[in-house]
Length: 86
Image (cartoon, rainbow, N blue to C red; front, side):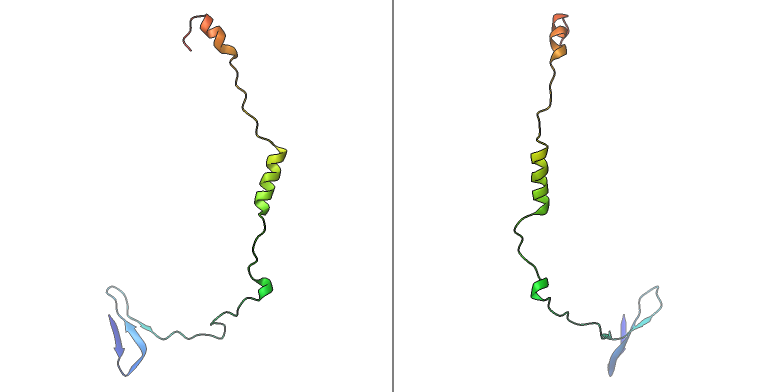
C-alpha cells in the first residue's frame, strides 16, 4: 500500500505486509547523469573488409590438410578362414 499526502507528493510511504514501512523520494540526478555525448566519427564503427579469425583458420587449414583416416582390413581375412563370423 502506498501512503502519501495529496498536497505534497515528493515523499511516499510504502507499506507491505511483514515488512517495516519505508519512504520513497524522487530520484535526484547528479552532475554525471544524463545523455552521453555522441561518439566522434573517427572512433565510430567501420565496416569490416575481412575476418582475422577466418584468415587464420584458412592459413592453418592450408598448412595442415585433413587426411583420410587409415583403415586396416588385416585381421578380417584370417578370421573368415578359421570359420569365425565377422
